[in-house]
Length: 278
View: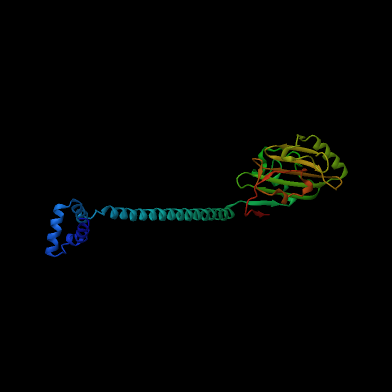
């Protein structure tokens, strides 16, 4: 029986494909009618092929997933590139704007007025001064001489004015007097303001000792008179006046260091393309 089943099972693949002779078919069918194991074996051979559609679906899903992943990756790269390009354009735009602003400022900015002619003194000092020089942020200019007289030997003089948006003034006058006129000037200066000044803009004093007169303001600056360093019978009058505790000019370019208060330090915002005029 065992051998017969083995023989039949060798024939069953051919039988299932209808590739046996009529005699073999008859013997096979007679055996199958009586043998349940061989019938099950045949059923296994003739069972329909499993549906492999799920594999195709899975493959398609994988392809779609890969495409979507590549699309997301490409989108990230595109967005990153776009952000970089925008950042570069922004930097270029800011630089271009700054350059354009500086060029415009260089064209429309006011001129720094610098005058070193003592003959023009009355235009800038005193009650008869021209309008833009008359008030000077309310600072007391009575320390300066009201006018220049023939008895005064003017050694040095300069007036600087700049007004980009707030007026700024820098003036100094060095005069050598005859001895009697010098003593009279000292008495006049004794009656002028003598305000506290130490600590304003880090000032610690003056090179020649106490000033002959001083008017100091923590917001607007200094007006003062000192004995001119190294000169007999000479007085130097000076003023550095500004707004908001800030100067746009480098005052050190316009006034000798010997005339400045010791350790004087005011915040400066030196503007580009400052144009000077005489």
